[in-house]
Length: 333
Image (cartoon, rainbow, N blue to C red; front, side, top):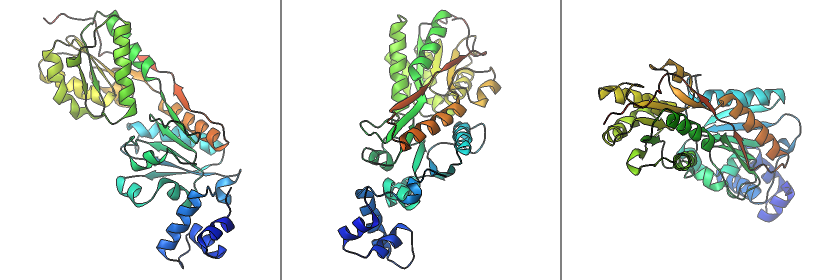
């Protein structure tokens, strides 16, 4: 483990200058401070604050995900993480992230400068600068629904998409549906790719054909439904599985616009079991992923990584929630 003196020797500067750079002192230049931080990261330096076994300072970095009230996907995940962290007296800071923030500073440098022992990243995509840098990070880091290969410092927490989608397909087949459509989330997402593969695998497993014209990528918002539901209906879909409840809410609206009824003409299934699912009309049949438990699992995983327990992934079981948006297949042809 590198020391302040090691950094000073490498840079040919005084130990006091290195200390100032690491602690954000105002009497050295920004360029020197950045050089000290980058060199510290390169040499694997960790401050006493980051290594302490007492109160730990960690952050939840969040991007492209709503989290400020209970109806939003990220809210309960953060609550679950904070509940577990509070029992261990961890100091948790929620930090909204954006592309400018990632461009301005490297991930490891940001973590070192702010004294964070680890982080939980929510809503990031594999194309984000900081996610790309996780291949080489030494900072204990947990990702939701994204996976970094061959780095013992990074783990992944999520819900078993294969189990969840399989439960949905099994339910629809038992009600006589064979032409089942799948409206996915965005393409630049590991979880979207998992749910696509899960849908194809489950359809084949149940002896059903996953027709290409009944599979589309959209976005994790209701509005995407209007671009794809008309095509599904034209191609004879009798049921639509959605990669999220928000997508499903848009699908229900779009089906009604076309003069059809849910579930009498079209069955609809969501994924997540957000509070909105039970409030829709009809109430939404969906796959539940327990977001409080996701947050608690993220804490357990991060705690393990901090203590050099090299956990790769932690998956929760999915649960099928049957409500009023599915029914037996009606032959519309």
